[in-house]
Image 1 (tube, rainbow, N blue to C red):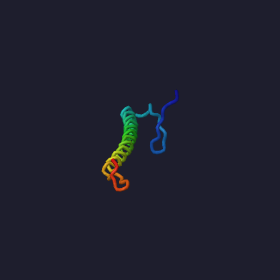
Image 2 (cartoon, rainbow, N blue to C red):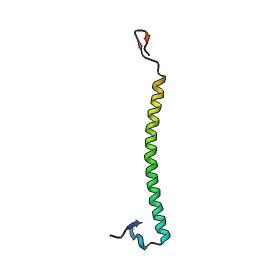
Image 3 (cartoon, rainbow, N blue to C red):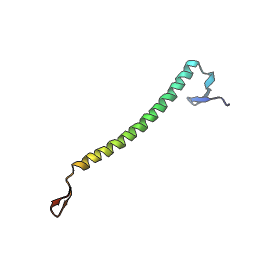
Image 4 (cartoon, helix red, strand yellow):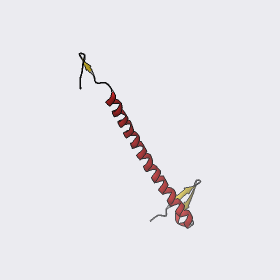
Length: 73
């Protein structure tokens, strides 16, 4: 299996050669990036839902169409 490397300031480092504390920080950075990505996706989905519900509310309060002077329900 090949050595896992990371690039820091345009310089490649073997992960196993970094201090244990640094390896933990790298793992946490990766975890936080995944969490942020998930949160962004969730935010985008919530914004779409918000728009859909807002549109439904707006549509629900519009007056019913009138046909030949009568209100259609």
